[in-house]
Length: 150
Image: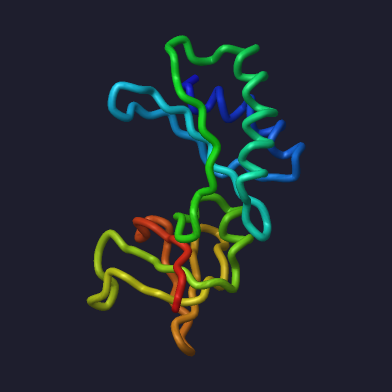
């Protein structure tokens, strides 16, 4: 089992116990340091206090389980406003909000679509562009991310 999966398995029940969702985890080398980063979210967004609470709750469990042998820096972060949607829970949470869909190959000559997320069902992502519903299969889609329209 990879480090990210082990860490996610340890952290997820702790994070959910705080009423927060573990969105993603990554273990990456940045410069000379290894970074273990958890991304968290909740309805209405997370703040510094949420990140601190998760850090304080998860760190002792990671120390006890010791899934990573080399030294690392542990961080807890918000995934950001314009983050990619990855899980079915993400798609359900952000229904009705503005998203940007990037495709691997053009559809009707266009690779980037912006609209309102209608949902994801049976591997099909639907957005509303103006009055038109547009459907994308998961295989067509490189990324779906929240977007801020000013």
